[in-house]
Length: 247
Image (spheres, rainbow, N blue to C red):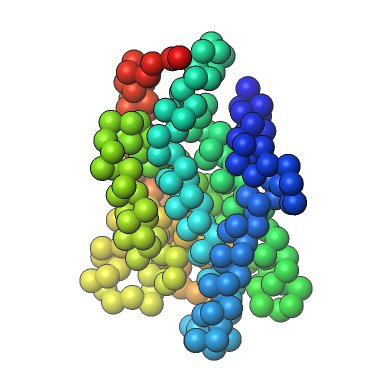
């Protein structure tokens, strides 16, 4: 059922013309390349001992997953509510479908840009693939947990829908996208230590750059935050189902 809904989502969103569903990879890839090249001209080839383009790419592609997932989750039940006529489809399927489409696109873009940059000497061979994948897991899990909360809440409030784009921009300094914890002042580190995104990003950077960066992360904060938000989101989704009208 999920795969059928994902195919429907891809066709509806991207159509069958030009490169079709490959746009799910092209969008984050183009954003990461453009921002990376701009930073390369502004800051030079390296910063703190790592390639500027590689550093931007490793942060910006997960950030696009976060931003796109939240924006695509708004009013997802109202848009797809007519499909609930089919008993096999549940409200959570709509969230999972849109999230997995974004996740697959982001991971495809990450792999593609890494291979491309490794070929031209701008990206290191991953130092620790295991901790890199753990970081991706936590980043994706926390994003999904936020989506589980936002999707049902957006059905209750029009104001929330308007605030989502602004919130995703405000969240950028707390995402670890463009900096490492060790580069910050102690007060800033104390604040960002409670950001699950920062822990996940530091894990990914540790897996990619290894000893070239001084990564600082733990497992308690992201695990606790993901569990609490996931449980809260599932409760909200269960409640919103009672208010949906199937036409």
